[in-house]
Length: 224
Image (cartoon, rainbow, N blue to C red):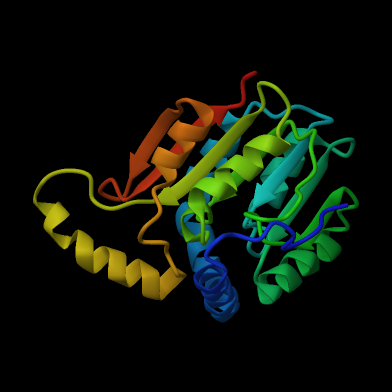
């Protein structure tokens, strides 16, 4: 059974403030997520294709939003597979459950949980996080928590945002960071790619998009 907020972080006040702000921000954007769904659909589906999902797999999705990834994941894992999807925004959870009910999917379990501190369980054959890891209040702890839920060799696929990486556009990074913090409660102190590199011991950069501000990567759990 997944339980929420059991492993408390050290800086509890700051952590809780960021977490609750995320819930507020994403509740606000839940009615407008279709724009993001359309813009990122080819990138999301390409990332899911790189996970090598097979019928019967058990998949964990971090920050599922309104469930935009459910269908391509379920197409890959079939009726015998299972998708466990978590999010912290009550409105996103409501919309994800509505999508599940509308499509009569019986192998999707949508739960409200904090991906950083919740006991996610174990035995997942893959994990997926699209536009969610960089808004976590503690990025590295979230990556470590997800890694612990994966079976040996299981992949983690991430689609996320980053600052401009090269050229004169880097001058706009402070403005970009402020915008993303307002728009999505982006964790300006977090570094998703560095956290994945540290926790998984490396990753494969699958591609970059939108002037390098959007990227996809895949990492795999190995035996320590």
